[in-house]
Structure formats: structure tokens, C-alpha cells
Image (cartoon, rainbow, N blue to C red):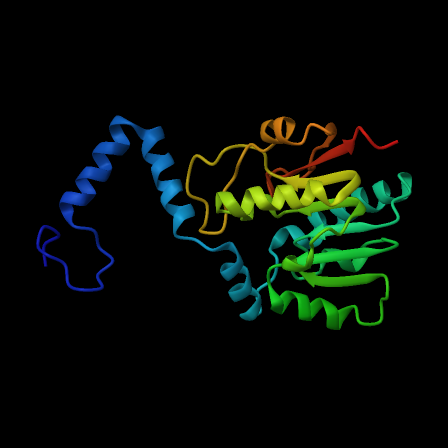
Length: 237
């Protein structure tokens, strides 16, 4: 059937007129076109449902939680905790827990949206009394020396979810915040569960009691566009 004819119910093929309109918009105003596509993506996506389904189907947190990237992250985090005498850690988005297997935290509180991931980690670390796992809804007013978000920000596609995550992250930290993420605005489609944002400018305005004092670049840029961003509470000794 020619594309110009009416498509059957349930067809995923766009009518020719619609395709021509999309192409025209892309050619004449590419940036606006891409922005509109990204907004449509955010409107129709649920981060929590995506990760719950992924873990339920035996998926993992992705390549960033394994091999050389995992080793790099654990080296940085364990060294930071030791040098700064961090006694408690809040981790927003621990995923499948693989990164946690080689961590050295005195007291760890992990929060997740996926019940499957929570139960998996509870079972795996059941003999480790230093680690506790909760649903993100249970965060409430909990606080720790260090709050961290590792490979999470660019997986929060929806604006409200992204903003709430940052609010929880900085509210729950008494001394330090560590973010491991990309830091640029998405300009093209990169999977349904990925949406990059330049977050540092936003944080500078919104959480002015915390100061970005160090960036640690990822030594494997071909594997990940994320880096470490270290924030210090300037009102805490």
C-alpha cells in the first residue's frame, strides 16, 4: 500500500504528509525540531516504570557499573570517604548493586524506585549490617555526611523527576554531595531512558549553600560521557 494512502489501525508508519512536515521542520528549524521531539519524549516516558521493568526482566544497571568504569568509580568514592572521614552515605539510585560490592562505607543508606532492585540488594547484602535499602519514598528527612547520585541524572527523563532528585540529593547532605553524570544538553535521541542536561548552572543558582569545588574526569571517555562533580556545603565546618 502506498504511504499516501490511509494506514490501518495500529500501524506505526506515519502518513506521507506528516513525514514531509517533519522533514520540513527539521530542515528549516533543526534546533526547535529536536527540542520539540525531546519534550514529546519526556512527556511520554516514565523512568520508574522503565527501571522496574528492566530489573524485573533480569536486566542490570548498564556497562557503567561493571569492569573498568566500576573500578574507577569505586577508587574515587572509597578514597573520598576515607580522606574526608565520611561516617554515613546516602545513595540515590543504587541500581543492581554491583558497584556497591567493592565499596567501603561505614554506614550506607541506599534509595531506589525499583522494588525488584531493592529486594535483590537486601538479599545479597543480608549479612552486611552497614548497608540498608529503601524505596525512595522513604527518604523523608534522612540525612548523611555524603549524598551521592551515580549515573542517575541522565536517566531521569522527566523534568519533575529530575528536579525532585536534585532537591532530595542536596537536602539530605550535611557535608558533601557527589554527582557522577554527563553535563551537557541533549541534542539528539540516545535511547528512551537517556536525557542529558547541563546541570551545573542550575545547581549554582538553586543550591547556593553548596559549592562545586572539584571535577574529576572519567579516564574512559569512549565508554562514558560522565564525570565526577564534587560539592561541599560551605556552611558546614
